[in-house]
Amino acid sequence: MKPIVLLSGSITYEHNKQGYQVAKDYATAILAAGGIPLLHLGGIKEGAANAADCLLLCGGGDIAPQHYGETPLNDSVEVDCRRDRIEKELYTIFAKQGKPILGICRGIQCINAWEGGSLWQDLQPQTGKNHSGGQLHKVKRLQKGCILKGLPDVFTVNSFHHQAIKNLAPALTAIARSEDGFIEAIADEKRKIYAVQWHPERKTEGSENCQSIFERFLQQVK
Image 1 (cartoon, rainbow, N blue to C red):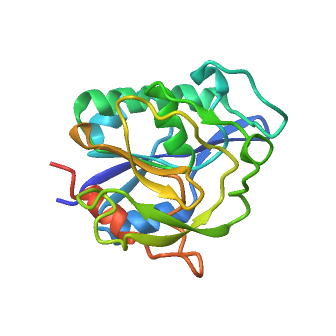
Image 2: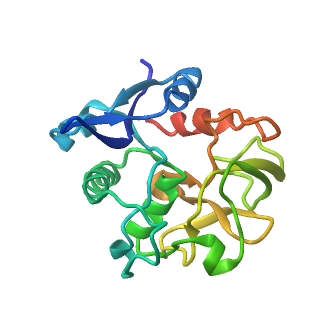
């Protein structure tokens, strides 16, 4: 039976009505890897976790800095505390059940913050580096036997984020770094928790085809 992947995405508000959405690319990547994507629509989180085999925390806005003991740095930090709360509860339930978890972009930042790490809230003013706007840059793989297995030791990724990991959470291991030193991928192999900072679901021209990440993620399902 194909593994069911719960996708947690953005909360939308239109005409005073709340909705949920994720980019089509996430579902396309899961389908191509042999999984069945299931969009989380709120409601009973334990029921959603019981119905799915693994969790994908998709990209989106910023996680509230309060999760790592800070206040917003500037107006570039845009948060949705409701989404933070929903996804943290989902993350906790899936982790407790020992089901695989994959975070992408916002997802890596959330996982690091929830596990006790911290973030650069805005890379440009805080570090002088710019990773936003879809620019391409090199990433070095630090571990061979991980979710990045099959990718070159050094490969090119797309970059659509203005935040990044500053202090890595104690339980997590950095498995890839950018050419300018930022953590680009993390893992807790024992708990089957993984995350990347770039967008492997987007087939950006000039970047590495990272579909193997989704395939290896689904292989972690029992």
